[in-house]
Image (cartoon, rainbow, N blue to C red):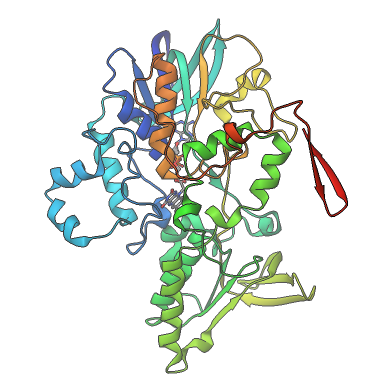
Length: 460
Ligand SMILES: Cc1cc2nc3c(=O)[nH]c(=O)nc-3n(C[C@H](O)[C@H](O)[C@H](O)COP(=O)(O)OP(=O)(O)OC[C@H]3O[C@@H](n4cnc5c(N)ncnc54)[C@H](O)[C@@H]3O)c2cc1C
C-alpha cells in the first residue's frame, strides 16, 4: 500500500496504544474529562477480545462488576448494567442470577462501549514512540489508507496486552498445519476435529476449556483425546473469599513495597492464584467423563499430569510427541494427528517503544521498572509520563492481568494525569492485613530479645 507522510503533528494530552479491556476502561473513564484530550489507537478493525477462545459456554472468571468502569464509577453510562438496560436485557439478567457472565457477552459489551467513545480509533497501528524535547513523538499508521500520522503526546499509556507463548521444544512445528497455540483454537477447530487424535498440552483455564469443548464434540466424532501437563495435577485456581482479597489495591501496595528478590520468591509460590482451572470447569469435565464411562466411552480419553514436553516432530503427517515424566524421570512417546499448545502468554517489550529503550530503567532481571503509579521509570527528566497497563506482575503482583482491578488501575493513572483525585481511590477495601500494621511495628533501634527454650533471636 502506498504511504504518504503528513508533516504536521497533532498535540494531545494522552495517547493510548492498544484497545483491549484495560485501555478501553481508560478510554471510558477519561472521556468525560473534557480538559484532557486523548486518543486510543487499536490495530484491529473493531473491539475483539481473545476471539480464538470465545466459546459459547465460557464465562468470565470474575464477577460482572469487573466491567470497564463499575469498580471506580458505578454511575458511568459505560457500565455492564447500563449496556443490558440499553439492550433491553436487564430483566433477563436479573432472572439469570449469575455473577459470571458469558465471555461472548463481555466481548459484545466492550464493543458496544467502544462504538460510543469518541476517543477510540480502530484500524490504526502505533508504529513508534520517540522522545521529542521533553514529550513523546508518536507515529501511527492508518491501515486502511497506508498513511502515517504524527502526534505529540504529553503522556502515553501502553495497553498492548500479551502475545501467545510458543514453547521452544515445539519450534520445529511452528508453521506446520495441525500444531496450534490455544489462542488460535476456534479458527482451527473445524480442521482439528476432523482428525483421528488430538492432544492438548497445558493445565490452565484455556487448556481446560478447550479440552471440555473437544470432549463435548467427541460424541459426534471419532478421535482420541489426550490432555497432558507438566503440573502436578489438574488443579483449581484459588477462589476463596479471603484469598481473593489478594486482588486488591492494598495487596498491590504491600507487594510493590517489597524488595525485588522477595517479590520474585512470593510470585513463584502463587501460580494457582491465577493460573489454575476454575472449580466449575473441572467439575464439568469430570461429570462429562463420568457419564461417558457408564458405557465405557472413557477409553478414548487420556489425562496425564507430571509430564513435561520434550520435543514435537512432524513425521508422516503426524506429530511425534516426546515427554519426560517429572517424578519417574522416564521418557515416553506417542503420536497425535494434531496438537494444541495451551502454553500461556508472554509480555515482550512492545516494538513501538524501541526508540525509548535507552531511557528505560530495568531491574536486575532485565524487567522494566514500573512505579506504583504505573509509570515506567525513565532515566531522564521527561515532562511526559509513560504509563503501562498489564505488564507489571513482577512489580505489582498477581492482580496485573485481573479484570477486576482494571478500572482501579485506570483511575490511578487518570488521577496522575489530571493532577487531582478525579476518581476516588479508596484506601480500605479488604478485611485482612498484608504487612505488619503500623501500630504493632517494633520500631528501628528498639531491639527486642526473645528468649525461647534456650535459643535467642534479635528483632530490630
Ligand atoms: C482467553 C482469556 C480469557 C481471560 N479471561 C479473563 C477473565 O475472565 N478474568 C480476568 O480477570 N482475566 C481474564 N483474562 C486475562 C486478561 O484480562 C486478558 O488477557 C485481557 O485481555 C488483558 O487485556 P489487555 O487490554 O491488557 O490486552 P489485550 O486484550 O491483549 O488487548 C491489547 C490490544 O492492543 C492492540 N495492540 C497491540 N499493539 C498495538 C499497536 N502497536 N498499535 C495499536 N494497537 C496495538 C492489540 O491488537 C490488542 O487488541 C483472560 C485472558 C485470556 C487469554
